[in-house]
Structures are given as C-alpha cells and as structure tokens.
Length: 454
Ligand SMILES: Cc1ncc(COP(=O)(O)O)c(C=O)c1O
Image (tube, rainbow, N blue to C red; front, side):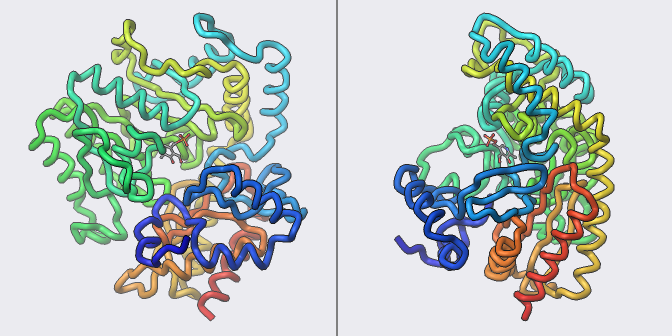
C-alpha cells in the first residue's frame, strides 16, 4: 500500500515512520540477503504498524551505548526508546538480575517480596514532597491508566486537561489524553471529558510570545480549569520528550491553578525519569511537586518493562478497589534490576554527567548553527536534547524531508536517533556517555547536515 505524502506528514509526531519511500531506499542499500530474510519473516508474522513492523534492521547485540546488527555493524544509540540510562546490558544490572533469578523469579499475588519493597522505599525516598506511595505496572501506559483512575476516584470527577501533541502511551485511555493523530485517528470514541490544550512550545508559540514568554499557555490552562470547573486532573509530560523544553515558571503556574480549582496534577516522566534531565526526576528542574508522578522505561534497567505510579500519601484512599492488578505488579526480578539501576546512577554520578555532557553537546550544536542554516533551534535539558530543522529560520517551516535524510545518513554512518514531530532530531544517549562518544556522534551529525545542505 502506498501513502499520500500529506497523510504521512499528519502522522509524523511520536517518531519517524516506517512507510516512507526513503526507508525502502535505505533498506535496499544497506541490508543484505540474510538480514532481509529475517525482516521478511518479521513482517510476515507481526501486525504492521507505522512505528515498528516492517522493521528497519535486525539486532544481534547491545552493550553500553551501542547496538550491533546481524551484519556486525555497531550503531551508537541516541534513541534507545529511553530505556538505556545506565547503558545497554549494564554488567551490574545483569548481575543483580541473575542473582535474583536464582532466588525468587516471580511473586504470586497475595505475596510480596524484598526487592519490590526495597524499590518502593527507595523511590519514595528519592521523590520530592509527599510522594510517598507507589504502585508498579508492567508498562508506562498502564501506570498512566492507574493515575487516571485514581484521579477520578479521589476527586469524584472525570474530566482531564492534557496537551495536544503529547504522548502518554498506546492504550485507549492513554491515547485519549494523548494528542497525536498517529495513535488517535480512526480509533473511534475515546474517553469522554478529555480536553486538550496547546503545549508550551516557545519555538512555535501559538500565542506568538516567542522569546518574550509571558506564559499565556499556562494562563490558558487556568482559563479552561475555571470554565469547566470540574476537572479531575491536569496530565502532562513535565518536558515533552521531543525535547520541547517547558518554560521556567510554567509548572508553578499550573500547580497553583490546579490547587485553586481542585484538580490534581499528574506529571508523566516515563521517558526521562532517573536522571536524563540532570535531576532524578524532571519536575525537580522546575521546583514543582505533582500529586502523582508516573515513571517507567529506564526504571527496568533497559531489560524489563517496569513503570511506577508514585502518588501523594493522602491519595491512598482506595483500599477496597483495584487500581492496577497487573500480573507482574511486584515482579522481583524487574525490581532487582530497578534497584541496581538506581544504585548505578547514584554510585557513578550519572546525574552530574548528564548535566555536564548535555551542556557540552548543546554548546557544540549551537556552534553548528553557524555552519548550518537548516538548524532552526537547539534545546534540551541534560541529555534530553533536540535540534529542530527548518527550511527557513524566519518562517520556521519544518524541514521534514531533510530531517529524514539526515536520519538515514546518520544510520549509514552508525548513529541512531529519533525524529519527532517530523523535523526534530531528538537525541537521548545513555547517561554514561563520554565526551569522546559525544564528539563522535556530533561529528556524524555535522557531516550528515553538510551532505543534506549540499
Ligand atoms: C511520555 C510517555 N508516556 C508514556 C509512555 C508509554 O510507556 P510504555 O511504552 O512503557 O507503555 C511513553 C513511551 O514512549 C512516553 O514517552
């Protein structure tokens, strides 16, 4: 099936699409017959969807910052689905997993286990304010669902305010609060009462604030809260993981508005928790404490699917209902991986490295702006970084085709990253990254931009 260009552009939000002609061309050039055979089988047996199958390539290994493909090529991974804070196959995490497998490999409902208890205790110690109660789930989207349910039960209200362009997971409740056509279009009726507002995006501010931010976007959220009057929760990504950095002051305003109108604040930090932004939790950059914090991805050490809802202690009010009830709610092996991951982050000072390497990389990328007119903006927080490509810095027309070319160019040279919103090169390397590795990646990016600009 062929897709019209317009349709593709509407769907380029969460990631680059696998149905573009450029994808087919890349595969033809770089994939040998042996790999192609596996790709064909993958396409034969998996349901096709625009962000995975048909897949690009087949992996045979991953270690540290690198992926290895079947053809033996190393690929630096600046994407990693945001699970590789401590690097892939981190030896200390693997050792903890192996030890736990030999002790207790599963925990049947009705029982608990020491790794689960220790992880819950650790998370509440790390989380700010009175975020002292935890519930685990086997996916971020499930944890978002638990947060939405708890917000409804705790407030007796059901409406939510969330952001256009946001992503909170792929399940029906999460796509209802999410704001991306690639997940919502043709899905039929979504949850009722899920109001959407424009996200805080200083580069493409709907209110035209641009560099003179007056936080009108936050005022608008307050306006909707006041007009509706019965909103259960505002749910949002603390920082959009496409690397659209929320302006300072935004969350304090939203926090105050939520308190004024009796709505809970749920912050989704699933992709950037545990240090990516230079703080253990992203909200700590904004000095704001939500009522519920949802984390995931890297929590499982890049090995297990594990997410957590961390809620305010006084929201522990539903002992006679089931909020989660997921089979792997207290999986001891996943929890052992999470404890080892957090220990590694702390022992190796990865928060400081994320901050330092993030500053270094952004500085280099800003210097690259002098050579490459195509770069409209460089931004980020810690090692959540984005470079937005535009056809013209004045009109800010997204350079979608060019971004895709840069991505496939970089893949050919051994660098993997994600394109979000069609034109944002999104860079999320492991927090273990060294300056040498960062330079190698940025040199590849520089070269690809040069090639695309001709
Ligand atoms: C902000 C955000 N929320 C929720 C999710 C969903 O997490 P999971 O894929 O574990 O369900 C993601 C995944 O990419 C995400 O980036």
